[in-house]
Image 1 (cartoon, one colour):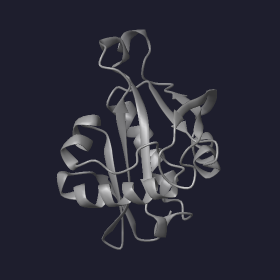
Image 2 (image 1 turned 90 degrees about the horizontal axis):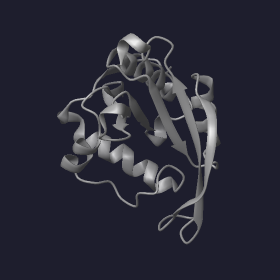
Image 3 (image 1 turned 180 degrees about the vertical axis):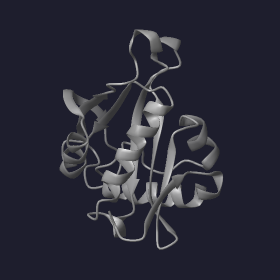
Image 4 (image 1 turned 30 degrees about the vertical axis):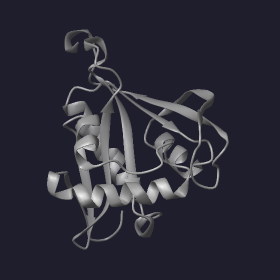
Length: 175
């Protein structure tokens, strides 16, 4: 991981940095179907209250990770979607791996037994990261969404589905 990097719980004070880093990811065209970052209230409402992490490098936010619930149904309360973004200037230095590793541990502490990710197949670095952190490919949604921005605007996109099941949460006594 980048020297001087610190992982800490995300707070509302991180809102501007979270949305700025998210916008950088959107601009790549290979991170999300979203065309623009939402306001903080919408972002906050869409994500689980915890775990949420911010990565700082030399005192500045350089990445973040959080979970989105996959459903409001009680039976799925331990299943979350991994959302992870690293600022362009901080990519390639292990920050994503540090965030994902910590997010997995914090997710288990919070009672999540399954964490999932849907990643564009063109985002090979993100797929490799998730596989290295214990995820497995469970499928692919073909032509699942129509891209309306970026270099791939006007095309139908696939997403690769990855999942990581907890070895310690989600046993019969936990659910």
